[in-house]
Image (cartoon, rainbow, N blue to C red; front, top):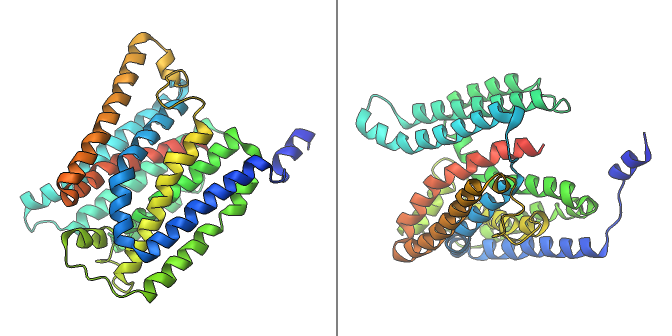
Length: 337
């Protein structure tokens, strides 16, 4: 084993700059845990209103900066990724409409089991394709695991859907680790040192939730938050704890995407195109990406306005549209591995 390899795996200590990173990360977790435990409804409403749109924009900007200018031999991977993202998103949107048309011939459980099966097959296909282009990525396990999960989906069709609500915010933890490995390798030990604060913060959220009175749930916003957190499925868990847990994870997710990853991964101001490989291909590509980012900013402002006019309806529509960005994170994460 050579000296370079040894230096990449041994602890490098905690420098002054990484200390500030730990302080910022731990502060984010502690403040979020306190707010989620004491006022889960208020935190959920405020977090989505303030940060849902900006975090999507920052995520899109970051992904553009990490995509290659040309797909090359990864073209099949990107093609399957794009088809899956668009197809699964549209299918998810159409499930309620199809049920209204079909009447009683099908139910939610059958349609969601089918959607989750396609979702798992899509992920398994991407993992298999990624292993073909990266010899270090062994994916011999993927198909047995995928078919085992599909069998579980048909036994309990809604379990995976509810689980994704809580797993999706955690993807940001992995992406932050990948970005640290790429651009600030010496800070990774500091990050790993700070990670146990997250489950400790959740234990505080649990304690606060069980100490507080039960959630009334008699207004549209509270009922929507409880339904999104899965109170209709996880009936043995207090709804307040479900809403608080989701608000806790989602707020950390927003903080990572809006503050930490841009500070670490963007080598220039977000509106600069010089660090976007595709923007350097031609003037046409630069114009297209500029239009895309400006349109995204416009959508952020429109989203804020719609939240002020009708928060409940806008939130419902936003989370339907958010399925697109949830799916987009999966191939991007696989690409970074």
